[in-house]
Length: 101
Length: 101
DNA sequence: AACAAAGTTTACCTAAAGTGAAACATTTGG
DNA sequence: CCAAATGTTTCACTTTAGGTAAACTTTGTT
Image (cartoon, rainbow over all chains, first blue to last red):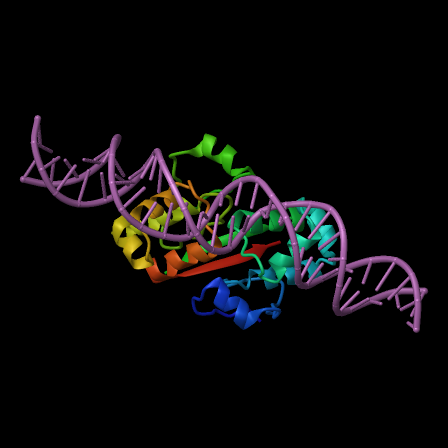
């Protein structure tokens, strides 16, 4: 299942509504259809599928497990370059971004 | 032409190397293969193709032309939610994000 | 050349990301 | 059931995005 789209909301609204929840996604396309803050679930599920702990991922990326936890749980909204770093250094993959008009 | 990939670099390194330059992209696929800071070019080119000024885009998104300029020129590295706002409110499109392993 | 329109830069503020250590909680394996 | 491993939260601090107005520069038009 793809991550479904949400309406635009602020980070605060999102926290109230979705704190602790995670979407589930199917491989192995890992298409996100992104939207809002579901990026955490994408990273979480990818990490699990690759059999990594947060600590192992953190080491590859060059950060700490507490930070990875925050990103996975959408407590901090990462920048694109941060997500990219995780995908590239942590998963050895590539982040793709496109605009659908 | 798609935006080509770059190696990982810091924002500082990028500024020194690429300041002022912009990639060009072809429509209408607007696939980004993102990577680093080329998102500015993606927004710039999309805006031009839609015949909008920075001021018009800014108004739709609910910001100012100076901010749009900074994003297009990669002076500020936007968050995903910001890019999404521009794509959604400004272009009436959708931002898509995926991980390619 | 002169003027208008569009784009860039500067300056300045606030709120949130980025960061990590350590404490705490939860899950898993023996 | 206990210990070890894994994951989450708290606290604390620094950097940077988000945001705007105004000055300035570039580009386009007559």
